Image (cartoon, rainbow, N blue to C red; front, side, top):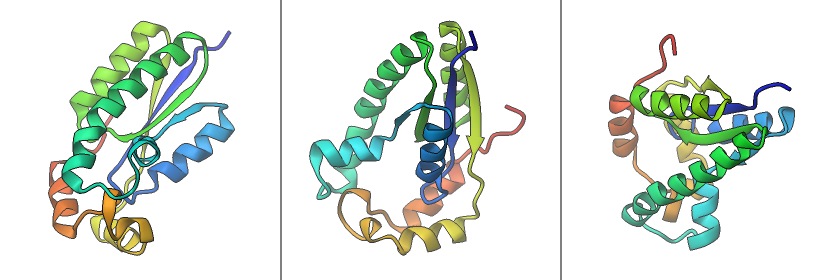
Length: 150
């Protein structure tokens, strides 16, 4: 029996993470976990950034518990979190290997100007839960650690 795979989608907002995660979901019969969808479903689209950010960690913690269980059952999982730091990627890779699964990084490498062009054109990004500014995007990009030989 083949080992299950955890696909970690790495990239900033607007890089196409969710689109890629949906492709992987179909191709590899994977459970797809996307925090924005859970936040929107549970809390609606009228949260401000402060509330959205406060909800993200508990949602991701819950999704990780679900992901570990699914991997332990021998099924593939794709997580659409962004995984902005090398240490975060290493943590989840290590936990995945303990379960007996394989971790794969899928890096969505898109220049910041292109990210902003995509984001600013999306209706859901204009207000509410998924809204953020160009300054926030620039700040996030400055702290983002692209995968090297991970």
